[in-house]
Image (cartoon, rainbow, N blue to C red; front, top):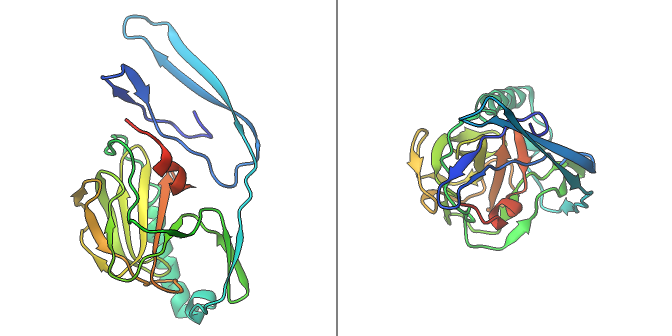
Length: 237
């Protein structure tokens, strides 16, 4: 178990090793935490156990004041808009906590666009003088209409407009791992489609709560947002 999560492992025949992906929440307090694994040999009833301790340090994240005005409907929504926000929240609660046990991702994750990063994971942004929750993804500086690519193999879980996210795509890569693509101007896939790493899934834009055209990409594992930058750095089988 890892922070109450069950971890799904896959077997690499070439290297005769088992592997899995797991992460921690940005809200995790610094300290030492233990990963516990258990299993059983096919030829024996004797259980196998393994424990390993990990040191989690403190991270410092920047605060960014957004000078461009955000529409009032995003900072002071009306009762009707609050209902739309609630309906979008129900959709996210239903879909974003799903865990598909089988692995679909294959090999290293790739950046969704070839562009510079304008905002990092963990920063806190201030819209119209109001502090927002931490930024839970990477923002890529791209103009409207830039092709957006799937970060790895998977199945399109969501492809629909939501209140804050705008035109929103979520890809399920299996084992509880999702990648999210926000503020799109156009969809190139539909829910249920199977996609490959590098496939164009949509075009960037500025829909939803956005101060201008860009791509917000996020990674979610078993209900926890992870730093996409770290995932892109991993060398995976």
